[in-house]
Structures are given as structure tokens and as C-alpha cells.
Length: 350
View: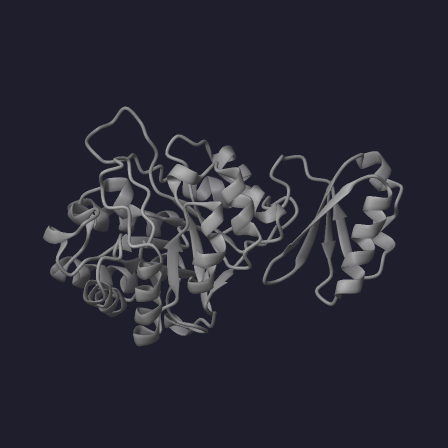
């Protein structure tokens, strides 16, 4: 069961609901989004029904949810949500391009990649300072030094930062630099990390676990939402199957399915799903055509020397084609490319 607060509800109204629920022996989890506040209730539903919560000041509705992911479900939030990252909208009506180097290596490399990404139409900069890798001997990222590089590049380009956090102990540090926290596929069910990210006060990008079902993906998002944060963007990045022709198998059907089940924005990672430069543009076309709210793409000034995932990073002619693609294809499916905070092409205001 969830209590939907009215837009004009104040903190006193929210505290009154929480106090009443707790007095009745239940638990109440407050989740604040851009548009409204939702309070998830855990306990005896029949007893909650006797509290007459609908009559309380500031309460818009009380909804009984049948699915286990109550806060991120469309049963309690029929309209799809928009998440704003440093003022950049991600959600229905727009197509947001997030791009940058898979890993931060040097200030020059990161700034070069950011400028390439921005020229192609990207409004959010992705870059990894902490890099969880399959091999313990592979490049693991620069840590806080990488975060400082990203912050400097943000100052230079004006692009808000999306970067990964891999340990609950590092959440506060990463959040002090980042505009959005990314949870990678290997941590998709690291529940302590998900809860810590939910408490950090920053939007969260949640990648689907490589072996995760869509329901498990949404339940992971619920862990973030239950800690007070509804500013979550889901990212389909390919799942592990028997097929070895691609790095992962892009489950393109996951986009409309997740959008049907959840109000959260859904984006696609064509770089890590295909794992090869020649697949990134075709998979980007597929993502836009199926209705994704955005894509996240690797770029690198010199991919032949990249310390991480060079074979999938776009350069030169690929980026020119990407720029053309993200401007021409979204309007065909009723979207506009996000240009800058508050402004998008096609006359649509974010």
C-alpha cells in the first residue's frame, strides 16, 4: 500500500502520516520525486485501511499495490516520470544522449572525449573513476583523482556528470562530485549499495544485472526508492545468454516491458551490449525506434590506446553519423533530442 501526497503537502503533513502508520505498528518509507512524494507502507494492510489515511491533510490518494515493487510501479504512478540530472531531463517526450569515455584516464583524454560527445549532441557526460572489472589485473580506475578530473571537465563543458559507484563506503565521496550515481551490472543486487545510493540525494542510473530478470531489475530499483529517492533511470545494457557473437545480448523488448510496468525512465547502453564499434549505431537506432528515453555511449579520442573498452568507443565518422542519427530519428517516434537544461529541439520544452 502507498500513500500519495498532494503536490501542496508540506513536511508536517508527511510526518503526520508517518507517525500515524508507525503508531499502528507499521513502517513508512518516504520517497521524494521531482513531481510528488510517495509513502510506502509495510505492515497489516487491513489495519492501515482502518486509519482513514485518505482524510488526512495533504493526502491525495491511498493505493493498494499488487506487485512487489510498489514505489516504482505504474499501479501507483500511472504517468511516466521525468528525472532531471543537473537540469537535463530524462524521460518521455525526449531522447537524451549520454556519452563520454568508459574510464577516466587523463585530463586531456577526458576533456577530448567530452568535447566529442557534446559535438555529437550529448548533454550528459559519462565517465568511470571507479571501474569494477572481471580481472583483478585490469585497470580499476583512478578513484578520487578521476572524480576531480570529471569535475574539472564539467566546469569546462557545462555537462553534468554520470559516474559509477561500486562500494557503499564510497557513496558520499562519489556523490560529492557526481550529478548522477551509476550502479553497474555487477552491483545490480548489491542491496547495501542500492540503499546507500538511495540515501545520497542524487539521481541514480541503475543498470540491469547481466543475469537479472526484469522483475529483479525493478526490485533493485525499489531498494533505491524505499530509501527516499524516486529519481531513478533504468538502463538496459544487455544480458548474458548463450550467444557469443556479441559481448552481451541486448534485450530490446525490455524497454517497452519496463516502461509498461514502471513509471521510471528507461535508457539503453548500445556500447556494452554489442561490445563492438560497428554495432553501436545499429543498436542505437533500435533503442530509439523501440521508445527508449535515452542512450549511453562510449567515446574516446584514441580508442586504440584506451585502458578500458576501446573496441566499442566511437570516433570521428561514427560520431558524425551518431549526431545525424540522434537528431533525425527521435522526431519520427514523437521525441526530440535533449539539447540543454530546459530546452530541446522540435520546440518541446523539458
